[in-house]
Image (cartoon, chains in turn blue, orange):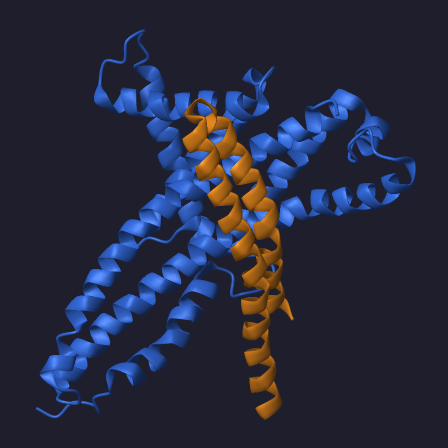
Length: 270
Length: 72
């Protein structure tokens, strides 16, 4: 049986990494062809995730009882309670109730979006910068809106620098704090995107290594002993997969708690 | 071709340098959070929130490096 030239494991990985990178960075276009307007796979998966969130939360809300009757309702209620108590009350404090719907929406959407990407064949909507950017802009506008609503435009601008500073220091600190305020939108977006993208890239590279070594051993390019290290790569892959599940949760948590903290900073009286 | 390669390599080096400081900073912050929660476990929730805020601030630098590596 004559097949194409068998590559060594490292050449195999080297050859496929650009492909992997391309598939993560430039997704397939469903409508449009890479122009300004179009519809990518990521957008499709975002809509699917939205549908999942709606279905999960609405079915849970339909069966609301004083005592949760099913395990599913209990699970969703636990998630909601987690957002309400640990995230909203813990970081906003007084007057946290009106922010719960927004924070809970963010948390559930990001959590399910992160987890969907871990199912083979699916794509994580948060693995593309455009969607995380949109999410972080929403959060940015939201906390600035509440800050301005509470303190008024000038008052909000003034409150960026903490009070009680020596007079000559105020402009410098104000400028620094202002930069850190503007940068929040960027960091929120890039943190989520970077974690998801890098995680999926690492998963892809471990999968490529596992494939490359076993292929090389079968093709006779490397010794069977070296080929058997494929099992180790496979174990690494499983480990990374478990780690990614943790990261998926932690990133949803971090995004929500940072939004909550920014809201509390915008609303607090220094 | 050579120049393009050097520039793209330097971007990666720049990102690596940008990640050193935040790495140390988050490490110190996590250490402080652990030590403080061990001394006063009842404050653990509040401390963890503060740790997340500090880590987010420190991480901003590394993220800027990450962005620059992409866009430059």
